[in-house]
Amino acid sequence: MRGLLSLTHTVALAAVRCSRGCCGLRMFYAVRRGRRTGVFLTWDECRAQVDRFPAARFKKFATEDEAWAFVRNSTSPGGSEGDFVIVYTDGCCSSNGRRRARAGIGVYWGPGHPLNVGIRLPGRQTNQRAEIHAACKAIEQAKAQNISKLVLYTDSMFTINGITNWVQGWKKNGWRTSTGKEVINKEDFVMLEKLTQGMDIQWMHVPGHSGFRGNEEADRLAREGAKKSEDGTK
Image (cartoon, helix red, strand yellow):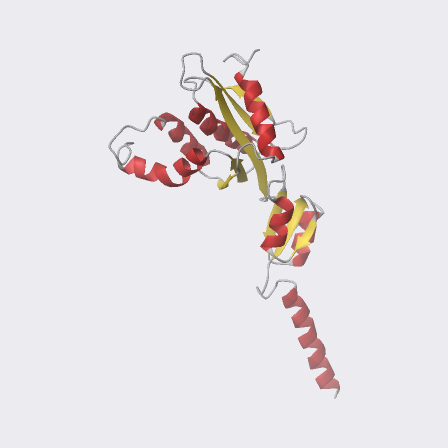
């Protein structure tokens, strides 16, 4: 009888350990910064807390203990770094395509964040270049902060499609489009692709001017940047 009770106790402990992730039956989603912080059992629950939340921090863990350590910002195996950071980027250009065009880029990390920036786009003044270089700026900033995992929100499907789909085809075709024309934004995409090396970036599209704070703030910063001279002054 005593042996049976001991066996039952052992099985019960094993079941508890499995429920905490050691048996690989489930994952734990930790949210350090979001609408609600804590540990969630499904990605859908986690996403509801971090999707379009400025500067959200979250990560997936195999054990509940590691997940809670991450939430508390404690040191644990794999829990002290490597979480995804959310950033919003936007570009704008007044009189786009005209002689007096003025373009700016905006990068928004969160309320009052020291990395938030709005600057004038150097070189050729177009909206598409501004969108690409806003993403470039965000990645440059991330690398300078030793951030290697980004969720980058932009309202530019041109930028997203360019870097995730079209670039490889352009390179194979000698930087020409499927119709044989030269890629207009070649230098810009070359720069963007180079910056993405060694980065884990989730490219996310957000509809422009739809009330999402991060996008609205990035747009505001881009418009402020467009008002500056190319040397950064007003």
